[in-house]
Image 1 (cartoon, rainbow, N blue to C red):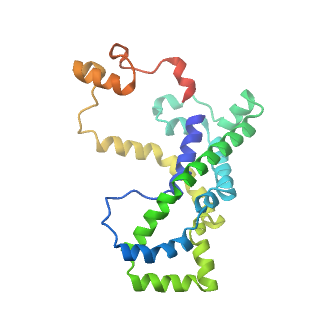
Image 2 (tube, one colour):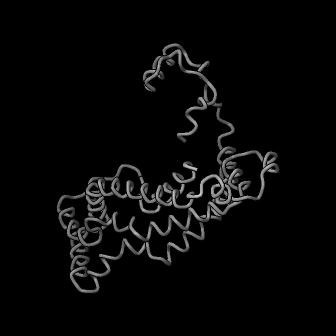
Image 3 (spheres, rainbow, N blue to C red):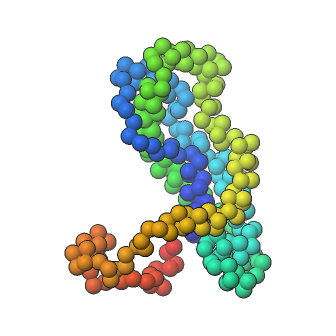
Length: 246
């Protein structure tokens, strides 16, 4: 259950997170100075909190409901359970099973998800100053001083001011959120096929090494990195006591 919650939260976070790219070229200081008032308008302080507010919460509720209504066999297939073992699973949904095991199942999952999203909002709010600085440099590379001045002049108008304040929030508009929600079930259905293609793309690579394949020096180094003793390293599944923390 927690794996599903974290997966959904990660998917939602990816919708509002910057895309990582290669190391950018340095921006001209004068253009950076001209870009700063533009970014102050288009990405004001608190933007991430606004983006991850009520609209995001509603989207997460809808996504969770969709996942919980999916047949158990379909969720198992997404999780990588072999096709031949799916026949033993019923058509029951996670919601039906959860309601039997926990009468407060839906309330518990919603409160847990809300707490998770609040923590993510705090985290994103913490890195917002760095994102604003990076966006300023990006604007400085994309636009010259004259263009930045024209953009800022437009933002000084009533229409420009409204556009600047709402441009980022448009990605959280109910119309866009509805389309993203509609896409999620289809994406989840295709996840097994996507995973199979990823596996096929790496089939020519040698398999990962096991603990037994490592040299003594490599075992010692790995143990140090993991904070355990070299003699405690082993291949195979984690102890059963750890499974509840997934």
